[in-house]
Image (cartoon, rainbow over the protein chains, first blue to last red):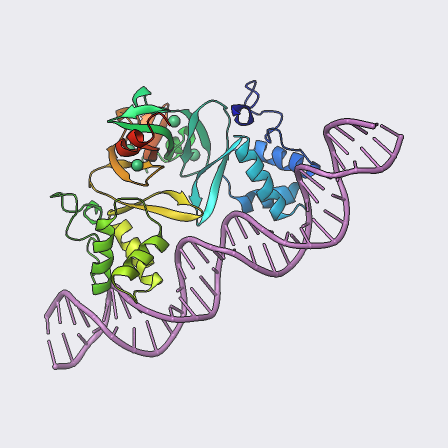
Length: 150
Length: 150
DNA sequence: TCACCAAGTGAGAAGCGTTCTCACTTGGTG
DNA sequence: CACCAAGTGAGAACGCTTCTCACTTGGTGA
Ligand SMILES: [Mn+2]
Ligand SMILES: [Mn+2]
Ligand SMILES: [Zn+2]
Ligand SMILES: [Zn+2]
């Protein structure tokens, strides 16, 4: 059942972001736009970018595509921005987390910084830890250089 | 400026959860109810518990109290439940995170499982990490025993 | 090839958690 | 005690997300 959450390990942009769900022409457009995304984005921002590429695609369709991509493990929520969910394309399909640049919005997939002691189905002081969420915020290499000395 | 986010280190239930904000009679009631909370809670659940102790306190007042407690560092968001923010009382006032029992809702403050490599203002592969979020989910000791063999 | 129909779509309405507005009250300060 | 910034309650408003419904699409099997 984990197959639904595993995508093609070859390359950072799998051929489909929707798992086993049907890929309509609208979803193909949305997937192409998402693959071009290098930063975190909201549903509305994605809708605008999609409308720029192919006008007429409804907001509900964008939301439904986001749900499908989330279920497929291709997109994750990495925070909120003004009440809207902040989304990011997962560029790797193993267990990982995200580093969100608070300056340019770029998102980097990072290895799980939690050790074996606090990994899936591990024990911590008598408690059974079954899952976890980690998000790192900071400056990417480029933005770090840009603000050097500021 | 960090003083606003530091509370009395003596004991797990500081005398005020509101930092420097004014403590009205309504907020005193809300603070007492929150201190009795042993599980994560939503704003509506808190409002119901507050109404049980002292009817007439408005939902907006509960939300405003939550905001004040969050700014004071006494309450943190530990997830969502059906679209509502899940909140938890912070039982420690140093840098820490939370383990939420997915069965009984109990919340335990846990030490930051991230090492020095990924701590505040640390560097990771050229990126400057300024903050992070960590939430652990699993079963507390009691619930783990309750489901033994199930 | 073609009928079938589950899955997807678009537009707008609806839902719902949260915030805001406004007239009023409270409580700390001097 | 006067002052007034801060807080309150009720309900309206806001805004993100989901739902509804009639219609279309596209994968599957005969
Ligand atoms: Mn991890
Ligand atoms: Mn930490
Ligand atoms: Zn950046
Ligand atoms: Zn438990």
